[in-house]
Amino acid sequence: MHAAVTPSRSIASSPRVRRAVVAASIGNALEWFDLVVYGFFAVTISRLFFPAGNDAVSLLFTLGTFGVSFFMRPLGAIVLGAYADRAGRKAALTLSILLMMAGTLIIAVLPTYGTIGIAAPLILVAARLLQGFSAGGEFGSATAFLAEHVPDRRGFFASWQVASQGLTTLLAAGFGTVLNAQLTAAQMAAWGWRIPFFFGLLIGPVAYYIRAKVDETPEFLAAGRAGHPLRDTFASHKARLVASIGVIVLGTVATYLVLFMPTYGVKELGLSPSAAFAAILVVGAIQMGFAPLVGHWSDRYGRVRVMVAPAVGILVLIYPAFAYLVAHPGFGTLIAVQIVFAFLMTGYFAGLPALLSEVFPVQTRTTGMSLAYNVGVTIFGGFGPFIIAWLIRATGMKTAPSFYVMFAAVLSLAALAVLRRRFGFR
Image 1 (spheres, one colour):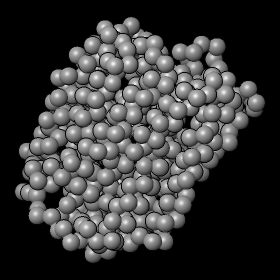
Image 2: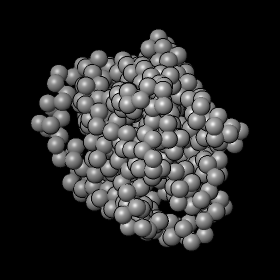
Image 3: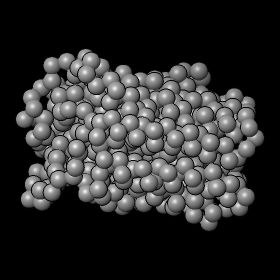
């Protein structure tokens, strides 16, 4: 039913499409950078804003704040998703970027607990809530923006959503590696951790460029403005929405597990912060380079077929990988596990944006994608690092993160089966 179509090379290579893809990818990378760099610097932030007298408790508070921002994501999905279906993908993407920049600026200049007391963590939570609201509309807007420019090559172009997140990982881990290697612990606590947040403010000029120089998607212009996208999504597409949430679970759990790995390497394996961050660089490079290839394969062979194989691979290999990592802790072992996991994660995640963009019609596409993605992310991803840290403490098993990932893999494989058998996606 949903067969791949012969690519339109002339349209795909036009300057208009290239401008749109480059601008959206860079904007997406910087927006995700602003969101996730908090997770990469969780250990430092926990000591500055949540000084509970116990490093483990402070870290749990910090990771909980990481997850609390995800409560706003469904609201952002509803508001910004509906705005994108009514006003256009370009307008919604620009707005989400500007909101993310505001939240990042607050964090970059925020005094610590030692300076302003309890106001510091409260303002930090407020800034993370603003970032969460922004991110709620980002995935749907950016994915629709990328996928709708060349529908015949939807898989390839939508995969740049994932490739740009690989760039995000490279940037965030790069900052973590360099800053931890070059600065003392005192310098990092005093001012070093703020540097990546100031860097994230570069997202502002990208928002201006998208607004001023990039065209709206042809598919949206042809379909026209939506009437009531939120109402229509719940009235006509509930089963598709639920199945989409299920498909998202593994992608988001796997992605946010990567964010937890520097903390895991430092706290559980005794690695230096710079070594743990360096291992993440490998993930970013693989994700950035491998995602477009997976997107191309999904155009050729079908989204579901391409996604099932890595999902099964994650289910089978994640526990042995963690067991090996725990038995042989070290930088080389961490790199080896990260390489295997990065290919599997990217193999699954890179086909996801195109699949979701085809599940919903144009008039409700951004609303449906945004809702599905952010409900899945909020429930299973946002609190993923917190749940993993809790599992390790509760079970006393350093392999505990693998249990959460296996649960996610089973759930997503079931959802893929529903999309294939009930709705005809291949």
